[in-house]
Length: 489
Image (tube, rainbow, N blue to C red; front, side):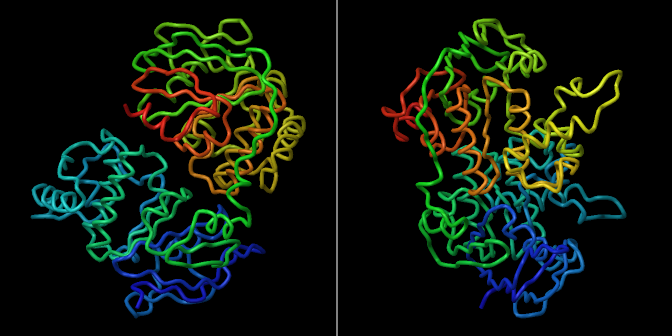
């Protein structure tokens, strides 16, 4: 019998049917992979499980008993814990304080610090986290150890069901494997685990059972599925359709960086990007890939070397880069890529608002028309461009960020992890868009941690290792094995 049973769960938001009679069991000592495109109903279903939302119809049973949490704290009290993609931690508090937050042990009316440390050490040791100091500031830890802290909080609350939403989106290969070992340990300890991910290879590695949602319906469940089967159930398309590569004509040199170095990384990086081609950069997390793009765009200061756009030195600032028709898509769209509280129109045109008014006054009609042109072109799903961009799905946010570059009519697109945290269907749309931009004569420099998309999209690939950018490899000569070996040797 399943530890947690969901029976005929339904939920509507106005005219939108988010969940349409989903029945699903989550078993003790098993990892269930829950997959589906953005908007398929995954988040709504988990928000119901964790007490954030109430279902319109259906019921839940926990260990055979009716389960209807009145809120997130109620769900936590009975052993339901969710770890979000954006970790919910207090960076200014210690590791131990984060682990016991809201349930601090007290003695004589004061927080019992010794007990906090003991609880934290016990939980961390269960997760191969004995090297994490309970007194260390949480914000000082690398992302993989902060994830261990989040799991330790679930252990400390004696969670029976642990839900992880895109837990590896910010992790490197070695950190991902460590997380998988921790999940194996939790599974062996009898926890029921729900694992939400867009990475098909991870699902194959970690899942005991796979459930696929599409348009609010549970369309498939199985103990195992091939990547082709998962994609087919999710979006009705095959893996071969995901990576388009049109006939591209390599044109003139548009961007050149020579021996570029930053304050820390990159140490030395030289690259040429021509019109009509997509050049990829791969490497381990921390190798300097993102720092290289940031140095070209002017987000990070350079220590030496040079970059030229159409034969002229770059200006070394984001404002100057936009003026020279260089656009950048940041890997962290929530923190620095988008202004989530502002409208879609503002985000698309924010870097050139001077075009739409004088003396500080904005011509809303002109701004809306400009933004709508590109959001329509990229098929951004929204009510209107006046909608707050933070309300959009991750894939639509990413397309809106790309719309900003098209609005500027850039000649070079610097794309840093352009499909991180978005579903397969949205990835396919972005892949087709990037391919079309290259075919139209744009130069594209792409950084990605996901080798299949680099191999599937790029014409040439460089490997960044410890701050040094290696030579160019044509896609015909490169293999995944050779790239990994160069990145790790």
